[in-house]
Amino acid sequence: MPIKQKNGAGKKSYGPVANLEEYVNPDWWNKIFNSVYLKTDADVVDDHEMTRREVERFTQIISLSPDDRVLDLSCGQGRHSLELARRGYKNVEGLDRSRYLIQRAKSRAKKECLNVKFREGEARMLPYKPDTFDVIFILGNSFGYFETVNDDLRVLREVFRVLKPWGRLLVDVADGDFLGNNFQPRSWEWID
Image (cartoon, rainbow, N blue to C red; front, side, top):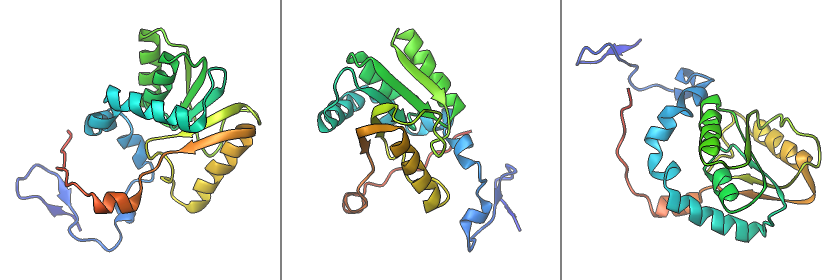
């Protein structure tokens, strides 16, 4: 049973719960990956210098050539896709589940006159023909968020379906051991 907060603001607290997942809306990502995401993670997602360094490193690792057809899967607001286009890569597409973030990406591309295609879509059912891309990026810890391991496996099957033979995949995920050994507390943020 919900516990009313002392400040009377009408917000509810459930106290300790045995299984937090029972209280999480299955569509949680739709409420998080919008303007709230840009506010709470702005220190990363709007850090242009960090984005430039990441793209520099990723393009070296993957040996990206200017004519490669690239998919930035789970592209968010398009920061990596846009940086690739700024560097002269001509065949870049970004796909994300969030309509809000895709609209932001399209607006930024238009404002900067960059030729990047952005579309809303589902990573478990990619809207592309087989053998479409030379390179697929899954960056910024964007892999592994689905409800089940089978969903994550569906993403990988789709990735390999749309990659050309000998295509390249780069997945950027945080190293749990590194994070544990270098933990830095960060304040909670209340967003209304």
